[in-house]
Length: 411
Image (cartoon, rainbow, N blue to C red; front, side, top):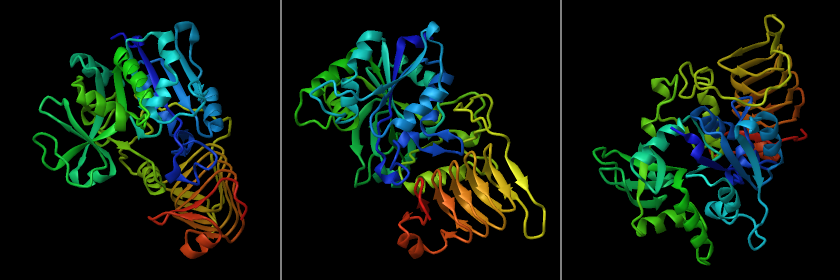
């Protein structure tokens, strides 16, 4: 298949309010994940591994760290017609920022007109999953669809948390409901399951251009694909088909990884997705060489573990420890450490995520917490032990009891 007929547009301007304070200084797609990655690395790797090499990343909200990460991590060969271009919001129309997902594409139609692709893939940049996108493209072409939407089967009792899709027996779209309050229609022949939209679309270019141009002229529109473009196309009888993500397979995939997709839009879901990586047979295996997860390579030395005394042993169990870390007489259990973290003697840390350049002093105790970058934790500090004390210090504590210490906090 000639995948070079497709242009990829990744929507990476999300503010991610529910992830605050992790998004206080960065866009949601730039939030670190799994120790050494950023959330946006997943969608980029999916396209590169699938054979798509023409990517436009549309940024807007606090994009500096995202811009730096992409520029340093993703050099591709322009001489072969490959590119991963950062496209900042430029207020090309009426001098306003992006008003919605459809408006983001509308304001960047010049890139589509310049490239003249046959298909345009419009994907979000803020979810955790692996996907061979070429299989969705084959499905799109087989159905002669004007629009194909990827969706994932979920238990019907979770429907109120997602945009829910109803299909006929041929998986053609019948209706779309955004976070329905009543029980939605189930998948044909699967009464306990319904379909949640993943917010990933493949358009025929002609249809996409026409739809966003018409939508831009509608003063009552939210300028959003889910709220406006898809319902309008459905009402007009356009050929919209649904791709079943649970049938997607990629090289090296295990049975436990089938259909894995996480919307890490809240502190609790983000924390849980990181903890999921620590299982013996994780639903997302970062160690697969067959479907690599590329990112920026730090020039740090290997992790080091120091001291072997009765009460002073540098050790980590069921944890992921990145390069440059020094575990000097402290202990970790079910933790994810980004590069260049130091844990000093007699400290005990469990069920936590520590980001780059965090230093934990002696005799500290940290439980079920997220410590953002560049935080120096004084000796004897306790975090995640007393909720009221954490709140009094200005930390965010999620509904699920995860304490978040913001980037650069002074304790």
